[in-house]
Structures are given as C-alpha cells and as structure tokens.
Image (cartoon, rainbow, N blue to C red; front, top):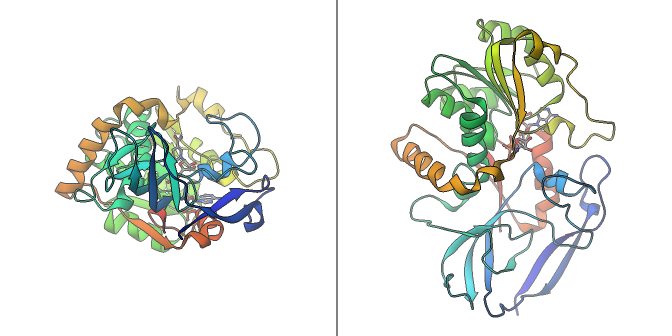
Length: 332
Ligand code: NAP
C-alpha cells in the first residue's frame, strides 16, 4: 500500500534551518471526502518565505503550527476526486505541503496545463515568484523607459524575471548576485546590462560604474548591507520595492536596518513593501502576458531541480547558501 511521506514542523528553528526542526513521518494515503480531491505532488516549490512561516508570531500569513505538515506550494496531479470542478488526471497548483499526497477542497487551487509549459515553470516564472516580479516591478516600482532598474538576488526565481521585464519595458537592468557564474547567467543568458558580484566586488563602487545616472528603481530581495549600499546611489524620485530580505531571515540578532535611509529624504525617494497575494485577482492577466513573452523568447526562465522528498531540509538550505540558479524546486 502507498504511504504518504510527510515533513512536519517539529520545533521553531533558531538561526539556520536544520533537519531536526522537522519530523519525517509516513502515514496512510488519505481518501477524499465529499467536495474534496486527492493530489499526488510532483514538484514542490522551495521558497525563502518558508523560513518565515516557521517562526512564531504575526506575519502576512499565520505561522505553520508545531506538528503540522510544513507549508509549501506544489504542482501535482489529481488521483481521486469527489469534487464537481476537479477531475482525476488534471494538474493543479496549490499549497499542498511537503508531502507526497494532499487532500484539498479546491480553495486557492489553480488548474495548469503541462502542454503549455513544463510543470516546474508553474512554480516559478508562471507562478508565485513570477507574479511577484511582475506586480512588484510594474505596480510598485513603476519603471519608465530609459530608467535604471537594479535588482538583488538577480539570478534567483524572482530576480531573473524582474531584470528581464525591466528590459522589455525599455529600462537599463543591473543585477546584483553572488558569484561569477550567476553574473554570467544574468548578463549572457538573460540580457541584463550588467551584474555586480557582491561576493567579489565593492557594491557601492560598482553601482557608481554601472548606474552613472543613479538608481531609479531598486527591487530589493536581500536587505541588509546591499540595501544600504544601493541607498547611497539613488536617483531623484527613486522607488525602492521591498520584496524580501533573505540576508536577515536566519539571523538570531535583530534585523539590520538601513543606516543610509536619509538618502530617501535627499532624493525625494520612496520605499514600499509588497506582498504578491494583494494582486491575486490579476494573476491571470500577468500569466497570459508572461506566457506570451516566454513563447516569443523575450523572457527566459530557469528552474533548478533537486530530487527526492527525503532531501527536503538540505535542499531548502540551498536558498540560504546561494546554491540555486533560477527557481528552486524539488521533484518528488
Ligand atoms: P531565490 O532568489 O531564487 O533564492 C534565494 C537567493 O538569495 C540565493 O540563491 C542567494 O543568491 C540569495 N541570498 C541568500 N542569502 C543571501 C545573503 N545573506 N545575502 C544576499 N543574498 C543572499 O529566491 P526567490 O524565491 O526568488 O526569493 C527572492 C526574495 O523575494 C526573497 O527575499 C523572498 O522572501 C522574496 N519574496 C517575496 C515575495 C513577496 O510577496 N513579497 C514573494 C516571493 C518572494 P546569491 O547567490 O546571489 O546570494
């Protein structure tokens, strides 16, 4: 008989996530009740936000409870259904958790077509990270043709899309990423104008070189020292999109705030936080436009595919060690 392998949250991590923060269990595969269906997960989405969901306390979603299956986005196939709108054989995306099988009532679940795009792309560029890049850049960043857009985490799931949309909109795109391979990917494969290797270069100096007119839009995925460096290079009326701060997620010390924030005053600039869910009613519109760009080759996407549910804790760590290029997914 098939088993349902699951990772449950066993304790709240202190600092970097560890395998011992989870409990690995095998349970019987559940059966759907009336109005429910059973999904067999095929790919799990590994996201930096998962680190925040493991913490106690108030955020934009409730924390994962101790003893609960770890929350994760996933794409899978329906293998049993007692739901009128979801049929066996359909592929769907939803928050199905770190497990082989999930029961769903269809809430927050989107059908996807594997003929139109490979399944992992629905967790990346045509999924939540792609939506984050699209709405964060276009709605919050408000880039105008000719402006300079800088994005950190440039070779990651969100960052790779941000820089390419900036180019499509007629902007200059400058990435910030860790390591020569990532910078090569961003410039040579994705067509960014430049990329700063923050592990090898002086970011402030490099920003002066690559953004001689200053930074009009900064899409921040990392926070910390890099945010502080970009604040010293703002153009007048610059917009900073606070999308994430991965450099701070595993810190045991308080979050490091930007000491150069008075640059916002001098440059009449703004800094605004965003959560992608606020645009949920417009995902379809964004997905259609981005699918068009993908089909025409104007937008490229890369997924970094690890294998095996049992490797989940170590694979999640790749995000915090900078070992992924493109969207990190786990194939089950
Ligand atoms: P990702 O960029 O694919 O992966 C994370 C990357 O972060 C790593 O590959 C690494 O790249 C970089 N990183 C890790 N530790 C770092 C550190 N200490 N300093 C600087 N960079 C570090 O992840 P993603 O899914 O696209 O997410 C990017 C950011 O967007 C995250 O902060 C995430 O929380 C945020 N996000 C926000 C929303 C929202 O609605 N607000 C939605 C989705 C994602 P390097 O090798 O370049 O360091």
